[in-house]
Length: 259
Length: 181
Picture (cartoon, one colour):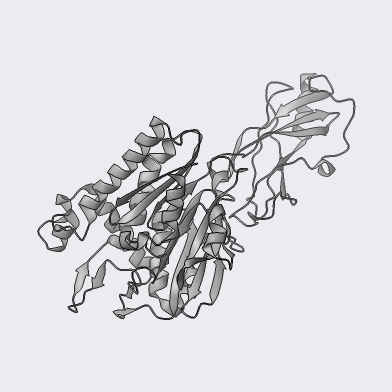
């Protein structure tokens, strides 16, 4: 197995490769393509950069047609996220001054990492990968009989410990929570920090969506579990503020057709 | 002769085997819901293809299944030891059309002798296709209660609340990255 790591978008991007292309030129050029693409995404979407398309859009200096097409794509995903979460997910976040600031970052990371994996890593023949951006990741395993990737889930109350592990062959894992940055997810409907919950981990097929769902669930505090149980084909873990844990599993819905 | 073969084919029943499957954690399937459909008679050859299509979708869990397909000999009559795969006045090999199911293509072959199906084999069934990769793709997290140091050898990546660069150095992920670089 080979590992690569680079700081992009203000967070560590980590790649693990196993199989045919791990350290050869093909593996390295693919990794460079992933990093380059994420840097480009940052140039377009960063709210920390005053000159990004997103910042200029937020200041009404640009309109949507002036932006690259992926801006519309991300905003469309954001609209769907607001809809499925009944407003618990929002791209207009309260700022300290009491206003609302346009910030689609909650969509961008998962979407960008999933897209980079599909575009570049999927093309690595006979190679399994796990690509993580700041703790949210997408994994692929080609041979269903090989060992799955073993993903550790950090204990939000003690970052020196893991609270769980989850085996993932092909899928995505995202966690939202309070550790590392302190409380940083605000319920947009109340303007207050999420209460009663320490972290939410969602496992599913799409990083874009498990990332959104982890964020939306976390913002709902005590209601996180009942909402997550409405999302099909997911597993995951909630760590409550008091350290209690709840596993959930909607991957086997009863009486529904596959789809 | 042609008439006889046509008559044979018009009276046989092709057993279409669908899949039994279990959850991602329980291994091989043991239950196989099956659908019995009438074969369409071949029109111009005693050994020609008949088509059959599944008419029902299985109703078990859709997510996390491990599809398998296996003949159910009990439902197709008593095997005749004398049957062969080569066409003869009393035995014919009939391949069903490829049926697209939600798990991928399925095609079965039957051998008919004396008006009875004596053998059923599955020529194609979903195995290793894209849908299968989603199947069994992930499982429920397993709660643990050990220190990271004890666990880290077996961990490939760590999922946690957004790991910012300044917090990165104290995260387990950095240790993993260092070990692998």
